[in-house]
Amino acid sequence: MKTNRMIFTIACFAAASGAHAQSSVTLYGIIDEAFQYTTNQAGGHTYALASGTLSASRFGFKGREDLGGGYATIFQLENGYNSNNGKLGQNGRLFGRQAWVGIASPYGNLMFGRQYDFETDFIGPFESGYAWSGGPGTQPGDNNNFNASFRLNNAAKFVSTSFYGLKFGAVYSFGGTPGSISNNSTYGGALSYTAGAFSIAGSYSHIDRPNTSVYDGTPTTTGVTVSGLSYSGFVSARTLQIAAVGASYVIGNSTIGGTFSNVSFKELGSGAGPNPQGYAGTAVLNTFELNYLLRISPALTAGTAFIYTRANSVNGQSGAIYRQVNLGTTYSLSKRTDVYLWAYGQNASGTNSVGAPAVAQLAFNTASSTDKQLAVVAGIRHRF
Image (cartoon, rainbow, N blue to C red; front, side, top):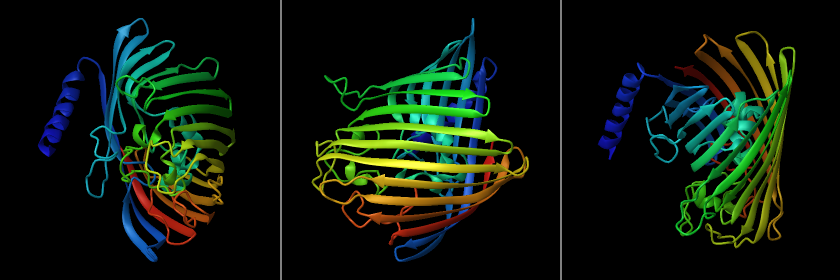
């Protein structure tokens, strides 16, 4: 199996080299490595190297062939990997981040394959974790998918060009279940508007059986890939609905931004995933973020963000509250290389989704053994 993957990867490189003479094909990537200090893990503190802290490490191919009349064939294949050990990301997928082909037109792009949802595409740029503070700066558990914790398989997606600052999109992900077009399917849409220094966007996604359609879990086992304790206990939901909005305003060298999301796990206990707590009804997480980025010089930026997440009560349990602060700076050594120093702190209270006292858990990190967690990272990121 490993040999087949290696042969296929080499073939892709060869194909890219051959195609370059006929069309535009680009090999690109990011390698990001940091030293991370984290508190309150297994009763102590940890010191470790972390891959993909500020930006997830990746490499990929993207291409375009002009068809004339303003139309073109476009494609993108993107791999995620761990620079500490070389392992594939996205549960071992070769091109787990993106794999799609489509047509570009004067009106927009129509694409088919494995793609981002609109929470990542349209709202993510307004969230500090996705835009500039890194993975641990993401909102708790990335419950709203602003930072691309999952993608949509079998998706047909249209994103318009900008018309006087207005842009819109729609997506439908086929579930692939014989005899049922809705099982494991997803549909969603988004709208954005930019006028000078002001930008705003809104999105909505409706996901059927999220445990199997986007979380890579199965209905018959507890081997669910969701690690965020803020919502991992809700994977028995029949549907997941995400409604979100983000906005920002540029004032000189400063950018003030914010987001809000409403995440609803509906029809808990439907049999769509494991339900050891015996939940029923709907679980809701509401998350607010306010962030600020300062461009001190062309090479130096600094930023901070405050995040507040509240999970409602389910089956008489109190629910949970998560408060988080991100603070740090990034310095560009060149157009392709920068270094960074960031700190993230989170506090939790109440009862989490698995029915236990809520503990802090910064996104993409192991949960704290207490209600508090602090992480400090110092790293280097190179784009190629």
